[in-house]
Length: 253
Length: 305
Image 1 (cartoon, rainbow over the protein chains, first blue to last red):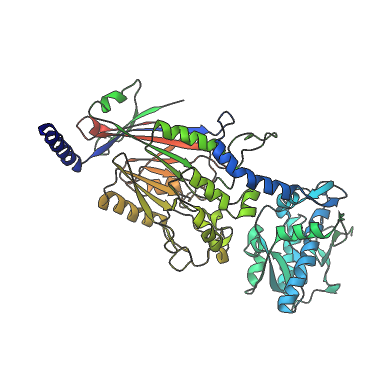
Image 2 (tube, one colour):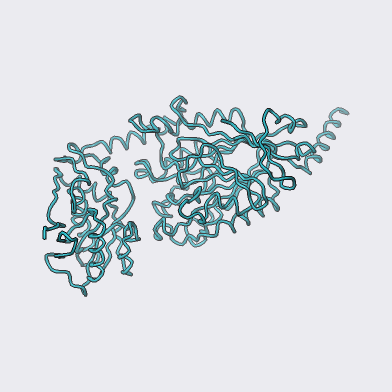
């Protein structure tokens, strides 16, 4: 009994001495540990991941279409087959959505060269290729731009000397990089007319310094991801065979 | 290579003096020593599996299942361990595209993460997409400079949290990066960004002076440093421009630091700034040793990095 009391008292004193605590930091030691393959996988965690992994793998590995050639963005000067493919399917898939919602048609499509994130290889095409081509979550927006602003866009396209993908816009420049012809829907661009330009929300927000989009204060968000458009097109068509065409060319005079 | 620093208290001479040999014992001669282990990751970006073996410099590195066994072994060695993440948990592999972050949060819960702050990519499915995954997270989201009061995230994050480990009081607060310009407005909606320095000073006032914490950690997604805009707020500028923070665990810039950076704060005291790259390739480990205050231990802190 007396011993118990003694312990209680001791604890009490200890508690009090701690109350006025002042732990002092005396030493800090830092290390970085690489998560290498010499570490064992915790089986509980691995087993938990497995069904998710299997599902994704099965889904991503299923063949959706066939690509006739290998299409790379480096193949082409002012337009590339892979870029043309991306913007043309955006027009095909997004225009019905836009028309249904607004009663209007998309006049042209613009993406950026940097946004083509991989090649499309020859052979079987699976969903995983859509993720490689477009790993980001960007969606399609439609921005009304006045003809005068379209000319600023054209100037940007000429100056950049990169094959930024365009659809439904036709450009011809001469050897001095001067504009010879600019048409939308086979008609010369009217500076006063409003054109509906489909693009990525990333570019609409000034990505790749496409500042001309800032001249419009309206935007229609289709909430349609570019990757979903690619996947929908893979599922719809059997054979992918885009070509380099005359949508943006340079003539020799 | 390990280097040892003996850091003088601010009241004494402030020079960073390197000393050789094993002088540590002299600081821990009296009473029990307490050890707190801080483990941390940042910018894991949905990298649940290890990198595959094809010609990549990170081949076979990373992977949550391996990180789990590593964390288990460290916790076995020292149960007084906190596991923290500095944001950008989401986006980077199809796991995110397919499951919207559910698996990332479930696995972090299995690994018993104590807290995470938010990165810009955690808004990639919108603030609603983030909110939808919250039921899968059994850890706290800590962020002090995002005002969520007009959003669905209101009341689902905390500016700071206090952890007690082995009688040591640890205050952790979080800081996020300015979302405007990085994330579309319609994704982060009415989330208001508050000044990181002012917020940090308010947090340290609470944690140091009101709560009397023994250790103060900032979980930051501000980024380590921006060479082209050196005045932009970043972890190094945060460390310099504040006081009472012991450790800043950073993210965003995917900076692989070979060792933590030591920065002097406004009180001329030392702050550790660390970041461990990205994709779960590395786990950061920082051990803090505390002694009962006595004449000897009051002399300073030695930092081994």
